[in-house]
Length: 371
Ligand code: ZN
Ligand code: CA
Image 1: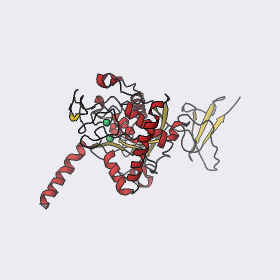
Image 2: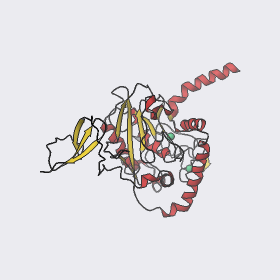
Image 3: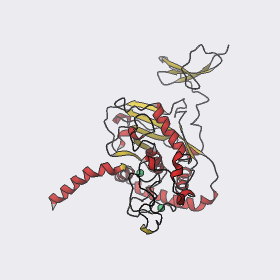
Image 4: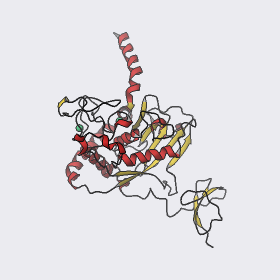
């Protein structure tokens, strides 16, 4: 009996990772184990969210929320050190998917067209860092850590990761060589988590260009994980015909892979899913090219999460470069380079122009030389 049990486990551990895709559910279990208050905090968040939606869903004003992003690139080989263009391509996908400007929206089945949402959420690479200095919103850190699993190493610089920027102000995204079988994972919205809040995504599944790898080459891993970060659950509710706490997503038996055709698994959860699974929802596990919508119900859950738990995202100036540079005087600092407001390398001889002098102690001086 004992022997049989061991064999079964060994088989499971070989077959599960290949199907895993998103590690958020497993990461939540890890957090439950390492933080005793986590369960209580999560229940509180879900309770408050239900109440907020009940009271506010009829009076949501149209207004765009812009989320400033810091991308931490952890690299061991040059392949991991993805290009600025690959990073920008991911920001572009997010801005399409969360505004329903994705060109593949035409693939949304007619029965769900009327509930497909413009979530009115946009994203920028942060232009001001936590010290009020200009930034590209991209931080590149060389590491010798090896593939990252689901633990605190990724957001701990002394463990070979990169420390997070204040997570009330920024969406932290760590791009790295991730453990095999996993595309990415996220921390859910809560008001207790102090660091490591954000997403972790494998370098091969981030953006649409560079070293991306089909079938996860259209940036939908980040679209999906940000859904979790804004408190969405998988459409199958992580249980057989489970509840994702969203009314307009049909109940479905389990996750879908690849790219099914419509209708898929109609009535598999009784009459609650008469049209079958909404396998093209960003919160399923289908291929990137097969996904194309969030619903209105998912949108309001995400908006309620921002308003209640990520409210610094509602009003900030972090998508614009700083207008005032904090001067820091250090005796030994060395000038690294001079750039203009667009980040182009410039010469101190450029007169009548705002220039930023960047020093090796990370300080920046803003100078304008008038003639
Ligand atoms: Zn997921
Ligand atoms: Ca549902």
